[in-house]
Length: 121
Image 1 (spheres, one colour):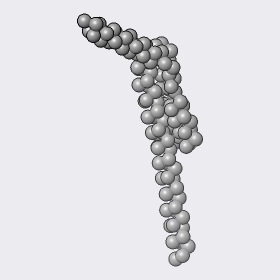
Image 2: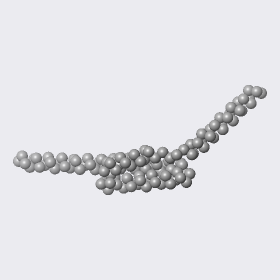
Image 3: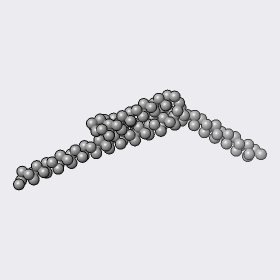
Image 4: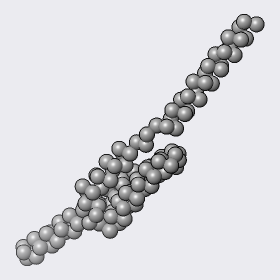
């Protein structure tokens, strides 16, 4: 009989501890570092100069603000989802801006090659 009550007390203790952990996670501050650094990287990559990249950069900024607002209202799950969207859009903005830069560099190289061919004829 004593064995059964010890198990019951241990289960009760584990349940209380788990409840405390879940409540603690619900009150955890919103971690925006990844989104913020992704947005900064997109800006530094020149996303504002490329139409598609600029669109995704703007979306990332709006989603970050929305996540902060949702977090302030206590909707942590929706805020976390919005943060993931902000990170994805910021990353896409970086890729699109790099893609545009590479395309421009390739076009310039092609033009230089054409000019060299023309000069050598």
